[in-house]
Image (cartoon, rainbow, N blue to C red; front, side, top):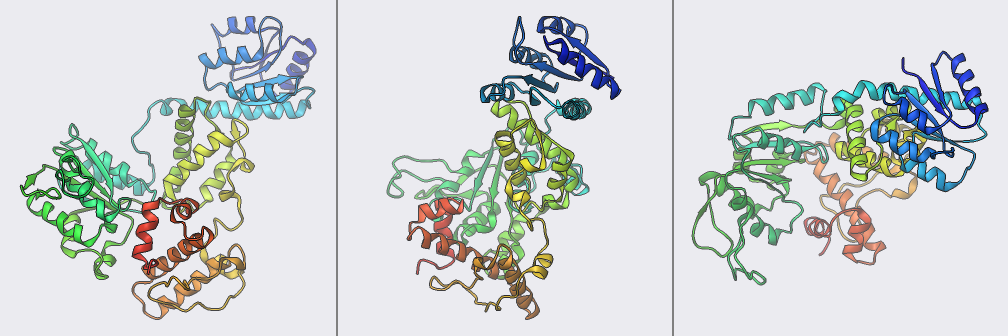
Length: 494
């Protein structure tokens, strides 16, 4: 077992810590100055370093920087009698594991050192595998099925349809399919068909000729031309307008297309990979998606599981995202305690892998110390009820009046429950309404409730901002193009 190294010019501090750690069965090596410790690093290394911040011949912060340059994952605990904010900030910016003000309780200091020792051992186990950054991570059986499918499709040019919830990593799968295909040397071009207004999407996909419309001052190549010889990824294909679905079908059928305002047919050698979070079969039944286009896209289908179906991947994904965020910020990676990780493992992650990535980036910026405790996690993980099922929420919520179903929301009175009856009451109302519709034999319950829910959110935001769409979109956390499209789709502008 490696030793705990203590460096302090105060003999009494060294004596007390050495005796306390020895009683705990931990090997200790003490130094009176930074120079001797740096010399010892030439031949050996500690498991944990405990350093004073102010010593003759060199400060603890200078020592911290030099040690971290050699041993970036070594936990370093900084001690000081100068309990000021500047020292604490400097210590953490330098990558300190923890900040320990003097005078300290010996038992608490030993407990802190044991925590640092645990983290050091965990880092030692993971260091070899963490050196390689994989393009995709997943040990769960469902993800292994996806990896096997990518391998089988590696030499194929066939069209692929990727389905999965928002944030589950559909574009990563598309990039992996491209990277391991015969087209890997060609371009990978991605476009989110839901993020571009309907009147601009045609030009984005197929390009336009000069003068084709107001503002078209030069000829522009579309995404199909840009992806020639490579892969075109059409994300959120389920939201593509019907008239453009017809044009896309023609391209997939005969390989020809026209620029907007053009008269000469063009060809592009493109493999199309499409993705959606929607149920395309249901969209076909509703008349919102062409059946012939669906069959043209649905040659090979890959279902990407949501994160709640692959909980065994949460720990390795969180570690990877924390390391990547730290590299981007130029700081030491944060580490999760077992208790904090347990909260992550039990969270439902409605936003899937993207939500976990955002949480890890938030922790890299906002967590107060290198080791993340449960209290350091964002409120979305700590609020009571967030991890509960709809049934358990319904059992505890008060019984509100039933909500009448309507096929489409109206701008005057959106048919959704009030959010003011308590933090979880509205969830129970949605559950009851869903059960009622399902029991009555309705076949479009998902789309019906989703439309009403979206309409309620948009109308509430517009009411709060007095009709200012851009401000409403900002408050909702969506783009201005998205809110405009949703207003049109939901009939809220009539």
